[in-house]
Amino acid sequence: MNGRDAENRRATVGYGSTYRRGRGQDPEDHASLKAVLNGQLWMVKPDKQAQAANPCIWMQAGVVDFKNCNNFYDCTTCKYDAGMKKKVDKGAATGWRDAMRRRPGLERVCRHTLTNRIEERVCAYDYACHKCDFDQFFEDVWAAKTASRPDEIHDVKGFAVPTGYYFNEGHAWARIESGGYIRIGMDDFALKVFGRADAYELPVLGKELAQGKPGWGFRRSEQNAEALSPVDGVIVEVNADLRERPALANATPYEAGWMMLVRTPDIKGTLARLMTDADSIGWLNQEVGQLESMIEEVAGPLAADGGTLGEDIYGNLPGLGWSNLRRAFLKS
Image (cartoon, rainbow, N blue to C red):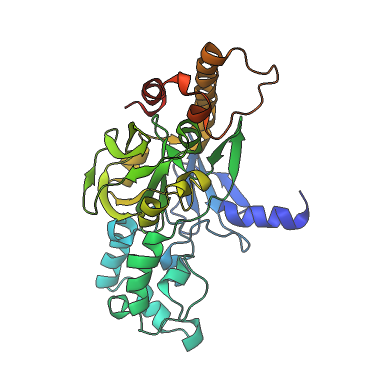
């Protein structure tokens, strides 16, 4: 790793270079962060080069020195944000909006810039976000309808597994987006196993999903299947483009091929019942192994080197049986 790469890596990790073992009798150190690793308390102090991976808006406004957002920029349910507002009400702290209003005009950037959701944009409404047309458009239209792109994708025997996504055992994925919304869809494995659907049956806005229960369906010729929802929550947006162009799911399963956007009151509780991208790699290897065994029963031994499977497994080997594949991999 060269010097430039090392600096970039360091800047995104979110920790400084100064740290020491903490002790119970240590005085309160407001400049350091407390972290517990293997039962040991560590005091981590950000240096001048350290950056928060997801900087809190209170930090970006200069009210606090260092705070990393751990609530997916969903300020409405953030305990830290609520605590800071109480301090402001008592006169013990400056509100982040007031802090931004004190800056020179061109430095009064939009709150979405502060949370790294858009490039630099100057606020034109003196931080009265409820009056801002752009804010309403961004939250209600652009962010809801525009899926983010995976940072990195792992290859597991020809099937893509993106970083930063969560998975259930029915091959559905969930990605947490800024503001606390959850975008969901079907993974690359399921879409290659069942091939291109003729149509997707997506629920209407406002419908409540139950984790582990059927969330949406799809059809191919005379065959139908249902996918289990990876999360609890209420649907706030549905991918209308997918209804018109079902092939989007197979072309870009983790981007334009998303199914719907969901709002849930308990993000962390919902995620605790899913697999992370790291967990899913070992699981997907097992799923591929099961699929290979099913193929060998129908078509005979596979190539000695394993190789990679095609993009329309059922279409090429209908003898696998739609119902068998549905029960084995979609769990429905």
